[in-house]
Image 1 (cartoon, helix red, strand yellow):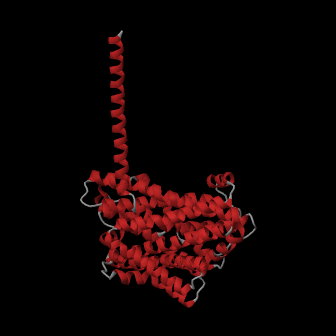
Image 2 (cartoon, one colour):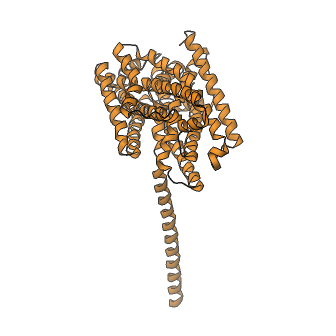
Length: 435
């Protein structure tokens, strides 16, 4: 009996030892995978800032305050389009080892590239205009700093964020990620205070609806504020930091990791955008307030939800303006150097992209009107970024094993058609005086 009992004990301990070793190996593999993923996280977080910029604040707040939860589905579909386009931009950068403007300079004629460059530079300036104005408005609303001085503070902080990039892209990724976290925390707080109807919000997320003709305009504006051309150029550059001396297998792995990065970052952007619409619907629509400007939204939050809510809104706007303005400046550098090979001093490039915003503030022009004009400019520019990217990524001689599959090309052209049609509608409404 003693021998049998001893044998059972030894056997039991052996089984426990084997289970322990398997568990250790499993946990070791998991930790290793997490460490690998962390090495690749970053580029998409920089890009995601463009999807939660001050332009999104304006359109999402307007949509929620005027049409309740009805337009949340627009945020979902815009985000899906953004994930697809950013994945394609990253794939181009990984497969070719160069960014989209650089590839355009190789594939298309010199005259065509000069046209691309002019249009893309206008996009960078128009985008940066809205984002620069957002940061300035945030300082003005939260700290009551005069607009001119708030603009100078925004410019200095933007210069600082981009300048830090000389010490490595990873540092910029950390700073931008912190600013994105501030926006997320601020809107989580807003959601907690607003107490929305999540069941109704979930229904409208899954079931598309347009209450009336005016809702079409707001829906198109939400799409136009979400899908941004400058980060399509920029993403193909940001992946180069981790794209050195790779084999074809390494490139496939890099793209897989980058798609995870994009999925995480874009869905965070989706949650923030959806939260903007939900909070606006729960606070403003419920109280019969149709909000037409960022300033009005900030002023209305305080009496309705308290000072903490308006403070969180102002803080989110500052974080959004600073981060997106820095990203716009980085995109301007990529564009200027890629299409036509202009090696202009980085500080000059930053000044060029920030100058329109500073000029508008100095002249006292209505920031919201400037925001609308910037969206009109982006309507023209978006196809100029997407179409060359589709033409390049379908070529096996340029993309190798990462060339687009037929289904990918089909989806790409479908998305492009939808975006172009939506932006044409936005243009028509703008020029007929309905926006």
